[in-house]
Amino acid sequence: MKTVKDYIRTIVDFPHEGIMFRDVTTLFADPRGFRMAVDQMLHPFAGQRIDKVVGLEARGFILGGAIAHQLGTGFVPVRKKGKLPGRTISAEYTLEYGEAIVEIHEDAIAAGETILIVDDLLATGGTAAAGIDLVERLGGKIIGCAFIIDLPELGGRKKLEKLGMDVHALCAFEGA
Image (cartoon, rainbow, N blue to C red; front, side):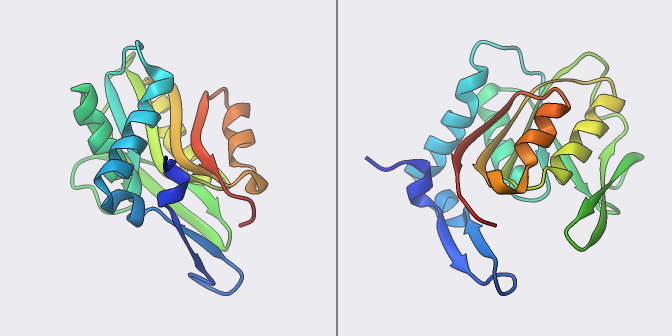
């Protein structure tokens, strides 16, 4: 029986030499694999109230939309700066080579709403930490963060756990 990890392909030296890119598009393309991933991402939070699912740009949108649909709840995107049309708040975070900014609509989450944050990959935790910051600034209560892949050597899980987050990943790959 296949696991979620079996559906993920590795592309060597992408986007540059020395990187082992973990490609989830092969998982998304397979109906059984995609359903398995969505169901398994929800499993740790079964029975908990989730008001909204927050998806991190960009593959988190695919997962977040599917998970929100499964839950019958709302979906909120956290996007790169300049992509959302309404009034936003933003958070800066560090990348391997520089900085980036993500935004959320300032009216996307009401104070006290329970939020599940999702994305495909947890590496250094920078994007997820920025998303956490945005949700918390709007008064959302984060019940957890769910990912398909964890790259443990890059320390993202530890970073998010230090922020008090309940972190779940469906599989892990060694190396960057």
